[in-house]
Figure 1: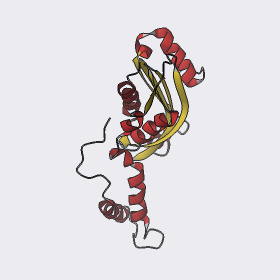
Figure 2 (figure 1 turned 180 degrees about the vertical axis):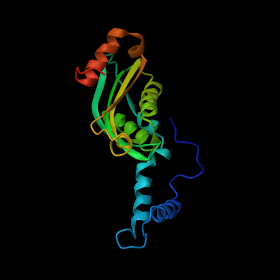
Figure 3 (figure 1 turned 30 degrees about the horizontal axis):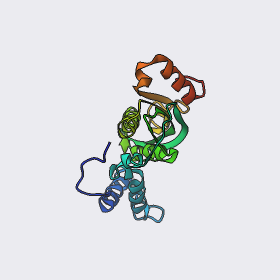
Figure 4 (figure 1 turned 90 degrees about the vertical axis):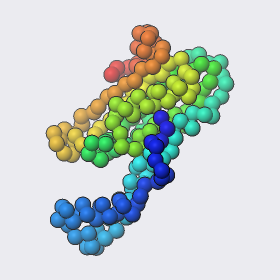
Length: 198
């Protein structure tokens, strides 16, 4: 998925600083006290980093592929990712697992990790993130099939609200052969999860 249609190409750090300052006042803090004086600018820089995926096209990392007549599964597991839940702007983090069946074209493994990274670096839902990664790999690599499984812990559930640390959300997206062929799907899930299933 390409970056969202925006006229700008980066976050507005000045606006973020002003907003953070207002939040500090609203919760009863003094934004001018020593410990908080530079907090608005630190938060602005942090948001610039956390939301960089809004302004970069993750799919460009799949443009550089190699012609290779390999028709077996390619699997990359345990790709760490960090994202921000769009409902509370709190982080969720975990591991992404990707498998695809090439159709005459393979891509460097680091490129798959870069796709995960940039898709995660925006306000997200885990369900959407899982689908974006799978669809991007299918479309850009013209793969026969793709499977993506994400396992993540959401701080919007662990540090607030229901407060259930240790709970993990698992989402999956199956495309092409992984969706239509039960044996291929089962093999992919076993390889992606180390035999734990989903």
